[in-house]
Each structure stands twice: as C-alpha cells, then as structure tokens.
Length: 146
Length: 409
Image (cartoon, rainbow over the protein chains, first blue to last red):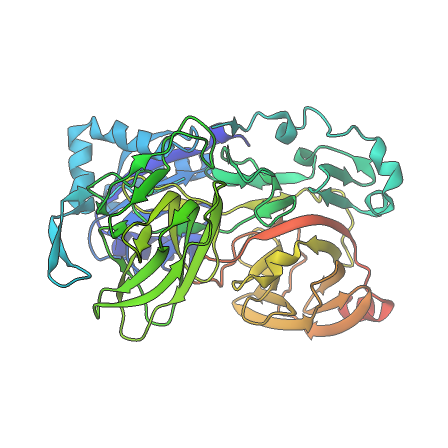
C-alpha cells in the first residue's frame, strides 16, 4: 500500500443519527467507541458539529479512506435514503491535503454551501479573562485528518 | 520540509539497510520467526535478513511527523512507518494511536479570525520542521495569545497542551483558564530560554464545575516577556502525542497499525513476544497497546500495558460478546519475553518462559493475524499512548509444557 491508495473525502450527511442507525443495523462491525463512531479501519474522522453522540441532524465529515472504504462510502452515497453527499475528494498528497481539499470544494458553490450550512460558527462573543465579552468573528470550521 | 513518501526504498524494500551480513552475529534474529530492530534498522524473517516491507503491512491513513536525532521534525507521508523516531531520546519505532489537536489553527498565530491578541513576527531561521515554512512566531508584550474559541471539556478529565518553545523570557508561560467560572486553572512557566527548540508540555486536570476552557499559546507574567513559539497542540488525556497541524479546525492524526506477515509461520502453540521498549515510554499514563491477535472479525486477544496500573501487563480477550481480562506484574525497566498462548476456550500468559497465569478464555477461534498497535476497541476516546519500540521478536510460544497442556484444544 502506498500513499496513493488513500483518498481524502469531504461529505455532507443529512442526518448522522439516521446513518448510524442504518450502519448499526447493516454493518455493526464498522462501529467503534461504544457504537458512537464509524471505524472499521477508517482513519480517525472529523465531524462538524462535533459531539459525543451522533447528531439527529446534518453534519459534515472529513475522512481519509482506503480504496475499500471509498467504494463503501460511494455505495452509501448512491442510496438517496441515507442523505449522503460527497462534496469533494482527492488523492492523499501529504500533509497539505486537507487545506487543498477544502480549497477544491470552495470552488463548487453548491458543495461549499452545503458544507458551510453545517460548519459555520456564527459571530459571537465569549467571556474575557478580565471581565466583559470579547467578539469572535464568524468562521467556517475546516477539520481534517493530517 | 523533507518528505519521505511511500516510494522511499527504506519502506518499499528495494534495498536492505546495512546489507544482510549482520544476522550471523545476532542469534536472536536467527532464531525468531520475526525480528524487528528499528534501533539498528535491521529486520529478519525466519532467520533471514529482509526489508521491513516483507515483515508485514503498515497502515496510517494520513501523514505524521517523525522526530529526528537533531530534534527537528520530518514529515512522513501516509503509510510510512516512523522507524527512526527520537521523540523519547533515542532511536525507536514510534507507533501512536489516533489523536486530535483541538487548537483550530496552529499554523499561524497571526490569523486574527482564530486568535485573541493574535500577533507576532514570523521566525525565518530554521524551525522544528525545517527551513521553508514560517509557522513559528516571536511574540512579546501582548499579555497573552490564545485561540479565540473555547474548548468544551468534562470536569475531572486531564488535558495536555504542548508547544515548541525557545528564547522564552519575562515569565512566558502556559496557561489554562476556566471559562465557565471565570477563573484561572493552571499556569506553568516555559522552561526553555535557549535558542534551540524544545517541545514543552503542560498537563492539568479540569476542575469541578468547569465545562469550557481557554488554553494559551503564551501568557506573560511580566510586561517585557518574549518567546518564540511553534505548533501549539491541545489533546484530551494526560499524554502528549506527536505534532498535528491544524488549519481552520481541529486536526487529527490517523492511527498506526502494523499487520504482521505470519503466513507460513507456526504459531499453533501461541506466540512469544519479546519486547524492549524505551523506559521513558513506560511512564505513559494512557494504555500502551502492544499487540492484538485476531481473525479479522470482532473477536480478538489484546496484550497491552494499562495506563492506570503501572507495572502490569494485561491480556484482554473478547469473543462472541464475552470479554475476559487477566494481568500479571512486569518490571518494565528491562526487556522481557512475554508468552501468550491461546487455545480454544483457554489461554495462558508467561513472563520469560515461566507460567504466570492460565485463564479460562472466551476466545474460541484460532487467531490468524497479529497486529501491532491496532486500535483498541475499549478505549472510548481512541486515545492510548505511544509505544516506542527499540526491538521486538516474535517466536513460537516459549510456554512451559504445563501451559501448553492447559491450553491445548
């Protein structure tokens, strides 16, 4: 196996809890961490919004996949009932692959809008150490697997 | 940054390191089914020197950094093992589990969207990951610099912050702040005032009633402080793992697994695993996963050192939804030969050839594969400590006859 066999994907999942329920019923061997995360040899995945339990709502997913896992996820995405949209994918090309994939997806306005819908952290204020509140600008979360 | 790719001859087996003559002077390599010596770059299978690529299949679905003898970082591509890592002081094979850096943008402290008081001058002299990048920053006189987003935490959990530091002056410190209750948690002075980079660690426990924290790249206790900083990292748990870059969100490093090539080798009576780990690694607080015997399905037999019980070696088996655990005492200051024999519904473990325990085992299937540092399914967060391996061998079980009788099918 060489690095060329790894593929980085960015996906939108319409309902994480529904997908996990489907996986648990159909492919229980793929679940790890107390049935809370899809494993099965996949690289550690990054989801937004991040949580300790599957979200009953839309999430974004970044994952580095082996060839078998790419086939698996493409098959899942082909089932419209599961609500999976592969927003973008590219061969793993080293430590800069994550930012490069996000740049690629940003070029597709439709795909990026889906990602932004789940990954946008709106402008807000946080408590300051000296009292009062500090403004934090809006940003779009872009987690990735190194 | 130099990058070793999956096509590098060290990994693809296009050539042997040091040739194959060395094996005549290493009896344990001649006798072993599999012999690994990352410290010397020597590997053998069935008494014959081979490149490591013939010893099994390594997988890491992403990149990782290897610490070089100089202290610098070498970026490795996906599926390239870290055979020459010096993170723990001397050369070893570094195997790590998955990890996540919760700092959302550690590549640039001057990205104002991600940092409060984000500022600093990029450092142009050599950085830990080599020349050519400008991700190190000189920060001074700002009071503090920290990510502008808080990190969700659980009271009582340990958090570990690491960062490469040099030229720290004027009370430059690590700091953690309890956002929930508006009070400081911990301050730890940065120790490295020299001009050489050093990775420093700050581990603290989240106090009761705290569910959100800030961690800092730097906090100055004096007005005239200054420090050069690189690669802030924040991980759950008491253990620091190797650097993970982040750029716009939390970043993860994929787990590392080496599936041994045991085809044609006779492990009918079990396996003896002779290991020599770096002593520094033994102070790890998380579980250290040594190896797993399995069939590729849900059943497994794990051997690991439990982080919450230093001085133990634990055997955990699972089959058909039933789990059993046994453990024995081990002095980790020296190398040992651990024998693990698994028969149908029976198992035994020994140290240096002496039977220590025999166990009623739920494992009812003959294992067919052995993985080093595979994912541990019991770790809720997936976090377990690095296993820096100086050398290891796998041999037919050295189990005494009594053990073999007990574990016979």
